[in-house]
Length: 172
Image: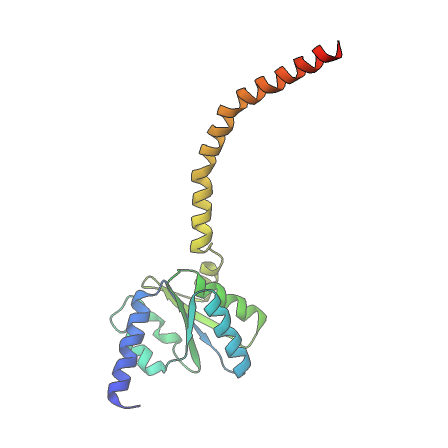
């Protein structure tokens, strides 16, 4: 890899660290190609990306950023999992690590803040962006549904009373 290629990789990694909602650093020593492909496929399904990068170049890319302290995790065979959604990459990595003991989560960064192992686990347990949106929409729609039900209830009650009176009239 020549100097121009290295500069391009450093620039790409810098963009990843700046624009991603979360970046998870893991040690992947011992993973087979099939297992790594499985991790990449899981990440793709969750709109996350798995990337193996040279630690030296990643350390250069994080210099001067808020997550510079994760440089200590960039040692050995490391892989970066990142996503725009602040929890997608953490969820994918945690799920894969539970299924496959060879992947060791070291830490990560979220919005310029370094995360340790426990921090990544806590982030993975948070609801995803889509889950939060669905929850908010449900909360917004509930009062309107209740109002519509309350408005329609008297008419429904009157209709059932009238049908009961009609049935009694027919029976007599």
